[in-house]
Amino acid sequence: MQHGGGAKCRRARSESRISLVDACSITNSLFGVDGGQFGWKNGRLSLKQVKAGGAHVTPPLGRDFSGIIVDKGAKVTNFNIGDEVYGLSQNFIKGTFAEYATVNANHLARKPGNISMAEAAAVPLVGITAFQAIKSGNVKAGSRVLVIGASGGVGSLAVQIAKAMGAHVIGVCSAKNKALVESLGATQVIDYTKENYIEAVQDIDFVFDTTGNESLSKCQRIMSNNGVFATTLPGPTVAADLISATLGLKSQRVKIVSAMANRKVLESLTQLIESTQIKPVIDSIYSFEAINDGMSKSKTKHAAGKIILAVKGKSASEQSVKLSSGATKPASKLGAPA
Image (cartoon, rainbow, N blue to C red):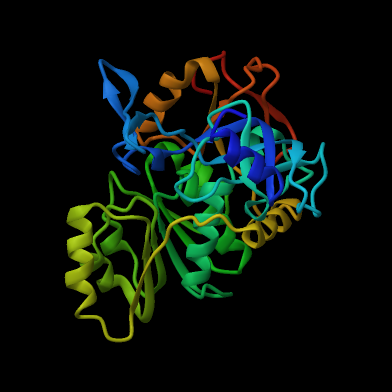
């Protein structure tokens, strides 16, 4: 195993932990989350060290993954060696940017049978975030839902989950991703570069800001009386606005969502995927050796869907992405965006 001391690994094998291999995904949330972990130096990914037990160490990176079980603890009874699974590592205990990772059995589920390993790696972090957000907004048939950042990893799944619940979904994205968001089920798509969506919509029951950059005080004007505003972890400026605007709320509510490893949610996502109600969207696939290129793409925050890191170094031609039409879209040349 690559992570953890010997005693810790021995203890893990007797508990609910599983070893996995294959692929993990690069997520935008890696930028800015645990800011002391990594940064950029001379255009390259620079891992920063933290102090632990008197020594300076580099913490492992990566949270979501897909893979095959190669070992399991004695208390793990619901998975077998050889099972194809996907999941999310323990919150703040990362380490899936590796060939092998040790993960709590309660934080993974069997991979949906109708998608590839690459597609499965694109689901856990953004899927759990989107699912928990939609649930927090009490979205149901007929609800009017606005998804800001509808073409991103979280947004693309949020659009589909809300649509599966019978909601009227309005997506906000750039013009180049309009067709994609429409194909995911959005009834209306607003190009934020040309139109102010705050002036274009009204009576929204659930606003989901997947960017963490939108102002609650602005969105209040377009929300219904009992509307819900949800956002991912906001930056300092937006957080201050949230506090100020929340004080003036009466029947409207605010939710801050963050993915928490949860097998039940993963199993719900599996059902939605296998029933073809939702599908993961992949922007590009990078080899493990091209991690800097993948991180650079992620840093732009303009990826349509998820960016995937293929840990085992499979060639681009071997990493194919299934489209909704049933055709396959080969990934781009190794180390370059699709």
